[in-house]
Every structure is written in C-alpha cells, then in structure tokens.
Amino acid sequence: MYYKTNSNRYYKIKDRKSVRVPLEEANSNLFKINDLTLKEMKKLSEDKIENNKGMNKQQLIPKFIDLVKKSESFEREVRNYLNENTRNKEKTGKPKPGDLVKIIVKPYDRGVVKVGIVKDVLTKKQEHTRGHKVRLFSDEVGRLIKIIKKK
Image (cartoon, rainbow, N blue to C red):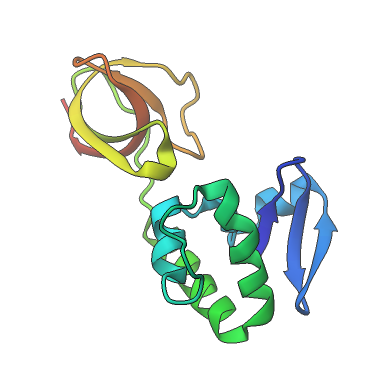
C-alpha cells in the first residue's frame, strides 16, 4: 500500500516498514491510503484508534499508517476496502452542459455531495483521474462523481 507524506514524498508499506518510492510507481499503484476520505479512515479505524473523532485527515494519516504496519489483519481489511472501491468506480466520461450530475464539493474529505445540472465544464481533458471539474447552475463547483442523466 502506498501513501504520500506532507513533504510530498511517496512511500509503500513493505514487510511492516516504509520504503520510499518514485512518483511514477506511486501513481500507478491502485492501493493508495491518501485516496481514502476522512470519513472512510475514521470508519475503518473507529475501534482501533482512540479519540479519532476530533482528528483531521493530516492528524489521522500517520496513526492510520502505523496501524497498517503493525497489524496484518488491518492491512488486509484496508487493502480489500481500497480494492472494492477501485473496482466499483465507474468511468463517467466527460459531461456536457445540461447533464444532470452528482458532484463532490471541496473540501473533498468531508464528502459533501450535491446534485444539479451542469452549467460549465471546467476540465478540458476528455478523461480525468479525479473526476471532471464542473460548475452547476447553482454556481457550486465540484468534481464529477456520476452522470445521472445525459441531456
């Protein structure tokens, strides 16, 4: 499993230790701890990390990583969770103005989801790894999760 530190260095957990890896290797790996939202991390570690309720994501990540290093069963649980979420992600394609969509609004780790009609597509690429950025008619900006209905 891979993760990124505050100093923008990438590591993988191997044999209960952190091993530094190049950016290309980290980006091509499916099992990234940083991809978990704060809500998901708290859910996975709720009975394993004390007082995780008041923590933000930056405070929780180091404790979460230590827990993954110490417990093989927890590492398997996180790996399975990440594997399921990666497999279940749909390729949505590029939305068009007028499409009814579901988006996630910043800060992304809070998981605030909105539904609305696309006013503008702010991402120029045909495909985007984190989801196309769109502006809704309600002037909310967020990343695309799913196209509910095409125009």
